[in-house]
Image 1: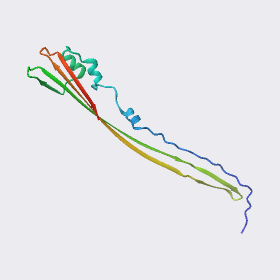
Image 2: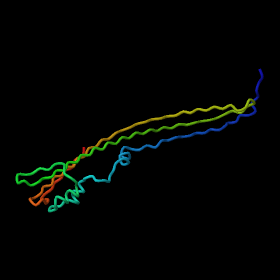
Image 3: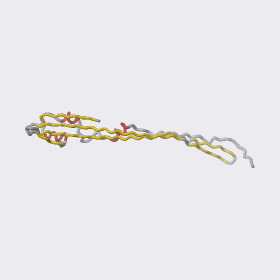
Length: 156
């Protein structure tokens, strides 16, 4: 058997690569998918737009068509707006660390190399559902002008 004499030991190199995957919270996901603009009726819209004495046409322009129209005992109209919104946000995160270590030995037979790649990974997730309701009641007088209005909002 022929003996091979090692001329030297050369470390081929060590490379360590760390990979970190970014994560977003449920609130960040919710902000990314929510649509804060549009034709949604809000408490702010009611407070800004609805005034005692305004016409029913102006109310329709500000809030749209009511969900329900009733009359009281004097045959005056009451308009009811009932808005329900459900928001669901899902958040998933995956992350981990991995390392790649390479090395080698130079000898008479050439370069002999090897490497190891240990790693760690984890994933998690969460969901959040919120339901909001807004009820607006607008009471009109005999001349079809707003005589009173009320609103109630809830979130659960």
